[in-house]
Amino acid sequence: MILSDATLKRLIQSGELGVTPLNEESIQPASIDCRLGADFLVVEDRQMHMIDLNTEILYRQIKGPEITIPPHSFLLATTMEFIRLPNNLTAFVEGRSSIGRIGLFIQNAGWVDPGFEGQITLELYNANSLPIRLQAGRRICQLVFCSLDQHADAPYRGKYQGQLNATGSQVFKDIEVKAKPRDLHKS
Image 1: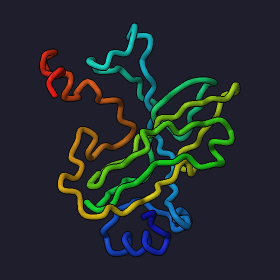
Image 2: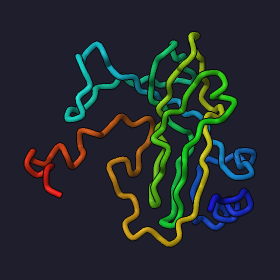
Image 3: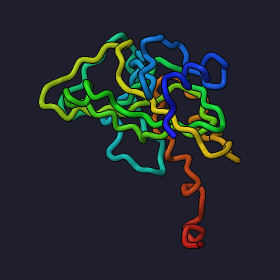
Image 4: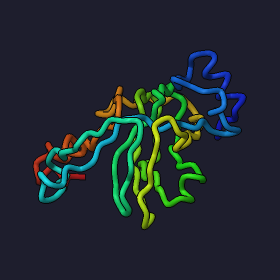
């Protein structure tokens, strides 16, 4: 079930759900708008010849109140808000319609697990033929919260728990990287 503004306000007031800092106008009828932070990561393509899922990816960090995304380019950004989900709620990250209409795609994996705490890293792609300038503090995406049928037995405690600022891919830490080739064929 998707949570309403009344339920979101009650959960925030009780401390069960954490969204900080929070502007009252960010609470929408069935979501909470999140604002763009001032921390960005760009793949350091001058120091890598390819991206390999088994190797740490190099990023160049950019901090500042605004950033311009060139046409057909990708970067990582973060929300200003730090999110803390209880073990019985999940959230979907969705781009705002007004942002999508200018050709900026919020390519987030789209899912925030129960028990997650941290800022949300956003994958931004400029699909337009023109550069797009973004300013920190502007509403960029929304979180749609859903209630689980019961508390998660194993809430999120993964490699992105507690992340602050834009956080690069940690795919090189996946269990498959540590598994021996013959282990991958076991069912």
